[in-house]
Image 1 (cartoon, rainbow, N blue to C red):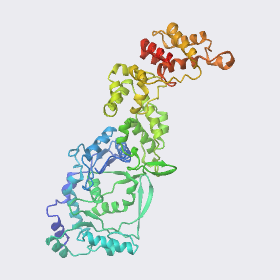
Image 2: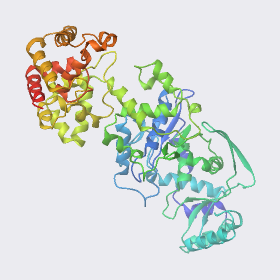
Image 3: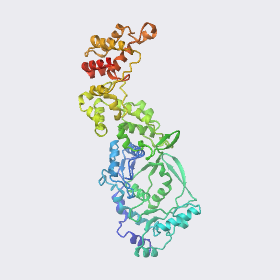
Image 4: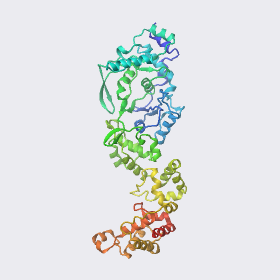
Length: 550
């Protein structure tokens, strides 16, 4: 009896690997095209680090006219959550990251290199495991969980490396005859890889991000096929990346220590290995200490958080590129209005240590992104967000034409308004434009320099009686506020006041502040001329009357 007999005893129905090699041929792509993938497990929410990886993978594939695919690694079925794949697909979609191939729902995929869900590829893995057994590079292991636990305890007591290797690999040298007899007797087994490595030898490896690294060789006889017939992650990823013709594996640097094992698997299977690019994790400043963003502690670790807060996907993607490549900021400064699709991402310019996640900076990016939106785009985004997260705002936005006028204030200028960083800011930023909201609140009027009731009332009365004209253009409007200031003894120009402060009670800017505060209850708003145009005469009169009663 030989290894082929053993392979047939374990996988009698598995196809020859030539079937799959022909079914999934080399891709017909131009030279330099990158084929990469996002390969999450459906075991919980999508982490911002996963979005970061998939954005980088998508970008590299796009800019080289390659392929980006979504593969679901669901071989650990005990940890799988309901609708986990749907959540992954929808999370990517929400951020505009569309795979060229891969899963598009719980059960469906698109593309010619599928199935793209590992639990649907069982026969493929078994064919390659059978091939390794035929070569004497894999073997059945009959050790019980109790025996493995006992072995681990002995290793710990002896303070030596835990694992199934060397003299500890009990089933490694079992004869073919003995193995077949045990199988025929119905004994339970798993399939292990027979590692040719030795821990006292080193391998040198060039990581696309980390540069040159070296490691001890892998000498562990890892499990490649579990008792349920499904593969382990390590084995499945090697088979999948080979057959899907992946050129670059972009993943978190927690996988860096697996490189010796993965390269060994590729070598023993006769595959050309992909290039590996290990991305440093996104870090958080926690009272002066840097730590990884945590699923448990940090709400911003989940991509759903950005939806809930209403941070635009464009801002999140832009910010992630900003932390991916140090030269992005300069590129953006020089290309203010270009799409991020035109930025060329370079893996060798990625940080080797983890980038700090800065929510303040992300919200600044959000302000800039939203400032470039048209009023229609702001309306659509805010309304869609409100439908899920803020019923009061949804109600306010029912009158689309009025909302568009509000969102149109100071938009499309050289210096557009930057008061909205996220859709959850919208209500607070516009509610004073709605009479029913404005009058329902107990308003405070922070008038600042001109605050005596008599002076305030005079400004409000005189403005409406003599100076307000809804048909004035902006220059005429401001000239009239200057005239009003002069008539009441205030400096018509700020520079006049600064030159001779004792001659005036205040200046035209302070008069404007009185009008602004009486109209909005705020000292800081977008352009007041445009606010008045949107509110109209009747609303203004009502607001001034209420202000005078305070």
